Every structure is written in C-alpha cells, then in structure tokens.
Length: 585
Image (cartoon, rainbow, N blue to C red; front, side, top):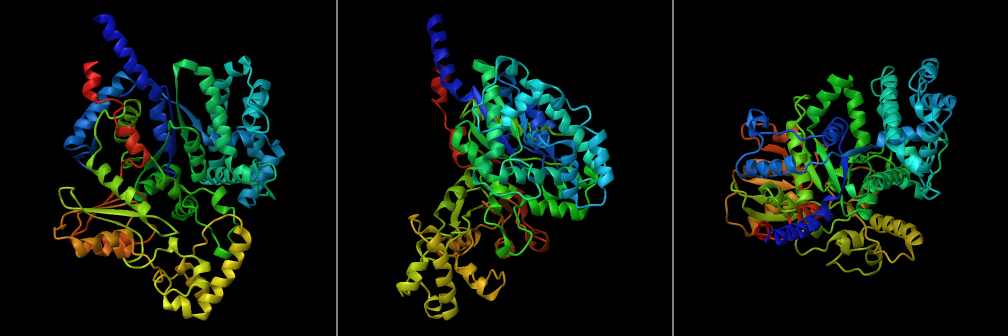
C-alpha cells in the first residue's frame, strides 16, 4: 500500500514537474514602478510569512472576502515550495555592449548623448570612475564570456572553465552597472537613464553601439538584446541541469523583445509591474531628484511617442524604441505595486508569491472576480474590426454580475474598417460598405488613390488586405489630429449602449472593465451612469482622470487591474488533474 502510494505521488510530481522545473518571468513596467524591487524579492533565499495584517493599503485590507483565502492558499503553498530566482538585468547586458568600446570612445559617446559642455567632467569620469577597477576588461576569461554572449554570428560554445566562472561574470557586470550609474547620476540625475535608453535603441537598431554617430538600421538587430539574454538563459540552464532554473528578466521595455520570448518558451510569462503615476512621480522626485520636466520626458519616451511630425517618423521607430504602454497591453500577469511606502513591499511580494504558486501548481485557487470580468473584456476585444487598436469592455452590476460586453467598432449595420480596403473604395461604389462622403469627395478619393499606390507598390505580392483608417485619411488632408472623424464607437461606449439597447438591469453602483482606460468622453458617460469602479490596464494619457473622474460629489474609483489575462489566465487556473483526484492519490 505504501509503495503504491509513493508510486502514485511520483506520477503526480512528474506531471507538475514539467511546469515547475523551468520558469521564465519577463518583468516590465515604467521607470519607478518597481521592476527592480520585484526582482530583488524573487532573488530572496526564503519567502516571508505574510498574514492579512501585513497586507494593508490605505488603512484597508488589500485582500478581502474570498481573495484573503486565495492569498492564504498561495502563501501556504509557496512557503513549502519556494525556489529563489536568478535575475538577468537588461541594463547589465547593455553595460556589456558599452564595455566593448575603448575608454576614449565611451567619453565621446557620452558627449554625443548629453550634447553638453561638460566634456572634461565626462572624460574624468571615464578615466577615474567605474572603468578603473572594472574586472570585465581586466580578466581574460570574463572578456571571452562577454564576447560569446554578444557575438551572435557564432554558436554559443562555453567550456567547463567558462561555465564555472559565468555567475562571477554576471556579478562583475552587475557591480560595474551599479558603480557606473552612481558616476553618471553624479553629473545629472537622469543621465544614467538617458544613456542606457539610447544605448538600448542603438543595439536594437544596429546590433552594437560602436557606430553611435551614424547608425544604420538592420532588421535582424531588433532581436540583438533578447538574443544575448537568451544566451544567458541557455548558459544558466546548462549549469543548473536537472535542478531546474527560475529566471527573471529585469526589465523588458520593447514589445518585440517580449514576443521573442513568447515565441520560444511556453514557460515565459510577461509580468507588468504597475504603480500609479502619482506614486511613481513622488518616488522619482524624492529618491532620484527628478524634475517635473524630466519625469514627463521619461514618460513620453517610455510610451513609445515620436518627438516630431508624423511624416518624419522613421519606418523602424517602433521596432527599436521603448514602448512600455504596449508591453503592458500584452502582459500575461499584472501586479499592482503601491509605492506610498517605499520600504514596505509586502503587497508586491504577496502578489508575486500568488502567481509563482499558480505557475508551479495550476488551479491551486480560482480566479478573482476582477480577473474573471477582465478576461471577458480581453476576449471581447478580439471582435474589434478597428485596424488601429483593439479594446474590450465589460459592464457589471454592483455584485460583479456581467450586464453588457462591448468592443471598439462601427455601429451595427455598418462595415468594420478591417473589412474595407482601398481597392474597394476606388472601384466598387457600394454605399453599404463605403459612405457617400467617401464615394463623392474628390479630396478623399485623391488621397486614397495616392496612398493605395504607395502601399500597393510596396506590398503587391504580400497577399495582404490593404485596409485603411478613414480618420487618418481625413486628418492627413486637414493636417490635424481631430478625433471626431473616427468611425468606431469606443469599447466602453459600445458596452453602455448595449445596456440601453437590450438591457433592463440597473447598473448604478456597478463596475466598468476596460482593457485600456476610459477617454474623457467615456469617463463622462461612466460618471453619468453612476459607475462605482473603473478597472483599467493602462493609464489614459489625456485629462479624463483630473478633469472628469475626480470632479464632483459622486466620483468613480479608478482601479488599476491586477491579475492574469489571456493565455496565462487559462494556463494558471486550469487544473492539470482534478484537485480531488490529486488529494486521493
């Protein structure tokens, strides 16, 4: 009987071991949101035992109702099944690329970045700072490892001697980055971020930073950084062998880098660490002496915005630049990090424990109500025929019961933009598909013909359906950014109208879930309907919060979503075998 029980337990362990033997987390989030704090927690040797009393936010328990039971289930599991992670810092790999430059070139590169008159100060920094005692340059074996990681033209081939020194190499790179950051920030509080953002863009553009003054775009270089990270992952897995590998990447800031790992590893989860803009701003100003202008510039860069006219935007811009907004949109797991108390990371820690438990033991608890409803909105957005962006929304009553679902699309009876194209507009004259304005306005037709010719010449043999955005076409003629010309209803607006069209249930005191966040117009509608909570994924860049939501006497609460979405929702919450059967075995 005992042997049979042990055999059954071995089978169960093997079933779960396939999931838990290798975990790869990609952390993403805006500067100041807490990615580094998360990586430090993941590196801890033992987990903390957290009670509900340790987990308070704004004088309330962070986990309430059944969520407090879910938290206890996952905390109990992680206390007995914890494994520390190894962190690969993207900034360290950027340092590895920087260290390929001679000292005099690094000084020139800094001068190129800053465009300042502090050339003597920068030269002194390179001469006497972190570069002076840098072990990567001094030790031949570290130089060989560095070359193997960064040279993608050759197969990754590290000898046993190299493997024995790999973690020492990683520690040396980490120390250099830390020391170099102090050197840079002694000159300007934002110089470190500015340099490493620029270097990262150069690496994605050309595969190195050697030609910093006149870089040329090479498409294959878009994956240079993730390929270097991947070589580190392979090396760590080779060293650890059957013991398993738990690796966190701090941090992914380009969506194509996230796609690189999603396509290669089923064990990869993109984890978005989110904090409110107010908390992030306070943290960066208090801890890193950021000015308001520096914070706003940083946010603009990290949102993937091009600083210039649209016609001047390089075709490769989106591939090489940071876009944390997009990374957040495609994240598998969203974690909320309250930064009001920098020293207290218990809420962040508890959420990390929660999802690591679910990765190791899928279905150990059920999804929260917030996750369930946002997952519906997330699935709904795929119905959108908008060719610019897909957004989903769900409206519930005060009991979190779903009352309507919406996505951004044209009104019922009209044809979505994804089903219309330039060729049809210019040749079919079907006013059920194309408006009379589009069919009769000479300016619109002339501009459409011009754009169709350019696209057709470029994509003639691609088999792609050459759809177009009417708003973009009209605005290119008027030379403005008028949002009125959009054909589609917003997802939130559509969900509200479904209630008016088909519903008969009150939603006052209810909830709105959106896979984006409400604009000024949708915020007003939510306010008028008496929505109590608005759950969102990415903050809206406009003034809807300050101008609409926070005004008056019946303001809705804007709540940043936390939980698993999309593929991860099913991967984490679907039990491998029924829990009862597992306990019986």
